[in-house]
Image 1 (spheres, rainbow, N blue to C red):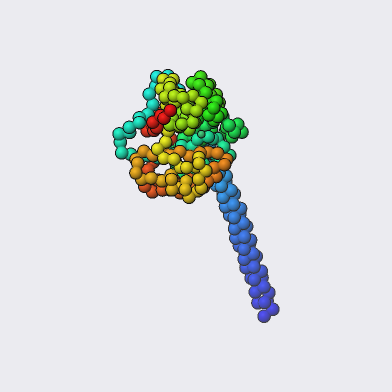
Image 2 (cartoon, rainbow, N blue to C red; image 1 turned 120 degrees about the vertical axis):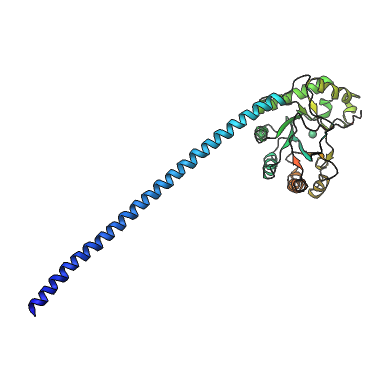
Length: 300
Ligand SMILES: [Zn+2]
């Protein structure tokens, strides 16, 4: 009996050792596998991160390259050169296009306008002035986002600008230099202060607009008026700007807006205007050398 008990204990002892050894083996194995998996995951995550960063660097390089090519092309096509004809006052195709144009910027509101345009994948045109020096980097930002930069006036002072043809071109050259500093060339697209149909210039120099519309084109510029006034220049509110900026009666719509710190209503009205035209199937285009040219009749 005593001997059988001892044999049993010996057997349990052996089995126990084997069981212990097996348990230890399983635990060690599990821990090892977990550690190996963890390392693998870490290596995997690091590799994925590296891949993403290489890919985003490559995408950035491609974007920069494309931008350089596009900018080189735009510099050649859009810079002012005497004798170049630009655009057409009578577009032949029935394509529905909206040209959003912003005068008087850059301003503290330019960035907000650019963000809204980006949301709707819309391109626009900015006719700049020499004011707001601290906002000038927005000119480059707008240009690099695919918008067109045009010239409005340096001083926007009618009595100075329209004092004589010489005074007009001196002012235009000054604002041309501002554009050149930001985008690398003097653009050929211009908008007269008050438009070509303004009647204020006659107060300072009767008949000057008739001379200027011919002379700017001789010097290689093209001037753009508008066929729809948003009314923001007259200080209208958001609702009025929205409704005045909407039409379905024209295929080529050139809308006059203003980009100024005081024109928050324009910024507020803009999304609804963009949605309206988007829903009607219009494209938003920046002014270019082939597109629609809107001219008013000169009244001086
Ligand atoms: Zn203006």
